[in-house]
Each structure stands twice: as structure tokens, then as C-alpha cells.
Image 1 (tube, rainbow, N blue to C red):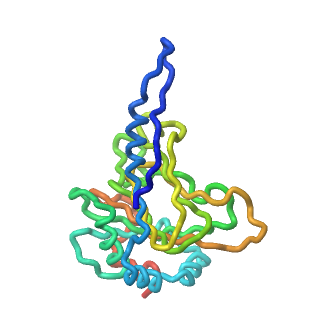
Image 2 (cartoon, helix red, strand yellow; image 1 turned 120 degrees about the vertical axis):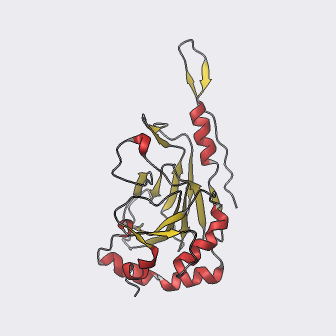
Length: 245
């Protein structure tokens, strides 16, 4: 199922008082319209195996132990057959993501966030990049597509994707003109252009009851080439790295 939402072309004033279309805004809005949502991402049996292999209880134990989920990512070359449940899930997601023939592999990791104790932004908006150390905007590389498979349903922690991209002049547009919000729902799969600004938003007020609720998702970025992040590991190491073996 694709999210259908209207978008507008933003106009600005010019010296003679007339208005001209900002073509880059139209381009960014067109990129955002490529966002897709699939209510059943992975086949039911495969998804059940995923949840059983990486259960919420284990996730909580890792979190309490200070496990760095966002610095524990894995590289899976698409020309190799799946060797574990995580790679099997990714193989099933591939027809939905529809990566181009230029994509050689995926970077994947678990996105784990506490959603009930922090209002507003849980994960600030950001760009996924090949090398976070690269300062030259012209040399920055982005995944062809970003995607998220939600592993549980929670009332907050919506994925937010904006129409903004990173240029040599900085983020454009400076303020988002269009945004998409996707609520976490078990086995819901979201795919969007990899160069878009995105983050996770929480509730707008502090809850009276401070229960710790986890939002768990499998993040999958589709890349033309292996990213340069120093913490990126071979996917075959995932069971040991995730303390499952």
C-alpha cells in the first residue's frame, strides 16, 4: 500500500513582485512521493522467526547493558544467499524495496528506542551517509533507498521523512515543506529515497506514568557500494555481535 498525500509547489517572491516556481522544491516533493508503506513486509513465518530470534526480552537486556545499537551495523552483499534469519528477511523485503541493478548490498541494524519517557524528538532528523566523517558535501554518498521494518506496534515513535536533502549550500529547503509520518506497526515496512532527511518523533507531552516502552525496528539501507563506517561488520558476524551465539 502506498501512502498517497498531496504535495504543493512552493513559490517565492522575486524582485518584480511576481512569483516563480522553486523547481528544487518540486523535485524534493517528487522524491518524498516515492515513499511507500507495505502493511505486510515479511512473510508471516519469516517475520515470526525474526521476532523469536531477537525477542524484546533480549533487546531490553542489551539496552540495559549499554549495547550500542546504532554503532553495530552489518553489511550483507546481495549476491550471496542468506545464511541467517536476518538475511532471509532482507531477501524477502527486496522485491518490495525494488533496488536498482546498481545496488550491491545492504547495511542493516536494529533501531531500538525508548518512546514513552521523552517528548518530542526521540531520534533527531538526520541523513544516512556512507562516511560520517566526510565534510565535503560534494563527496558525501547516500543509500539509494532507506527502509524500516517495524518489529512491534507502539502508540508513539513515528518515523518522520521530510522533503529535505543535503546540498553544497546546506539543507534544502531550510524548513520542510512536506513531511510524511508513519506509525510503528508490527511487520509494517517503509521504503523511501535514501537521501531524504528523517528521524523519529515521540509524544508531545511527558506521560504521567513513566513506563519504559521500546520501539524496535530493523533498519535496512540499500547501497551501491559498501559504506565506510568503521563500525560496519560483515553480516556473518551478527549472531556473535548481537550476543545470540
